[in-house]
Image (cartoon, rainbow, N blue to C red; front, side, top):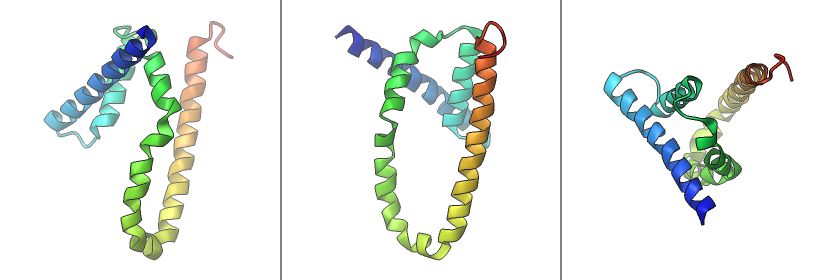
Length: 124
């Protein structure tokens, strides 16, 4: 019971930060999506020590563990765009592959920096 409540509270905290990012994006008219601003806000709050990683870690792990379920509605919705995929499939495939490669490279760099930052000797 207590663990379930802890998950709910942690996910609620992440949701509040997400909504704050959406609000900032709407009010500031920045060309950055609200969810990205929410992640930046979360990162800054963690970096400043205002939020401790322990306060969100289990809830975030639960969401990441079940991340694939969040993509099912998107995949079903894409079925109505099958004509677009038939016409522009090659361009879309190149775009997806390049975008994925860039994301993997960026995440690799960020992960390496975080590992060095958390490690007392500056390495793994």
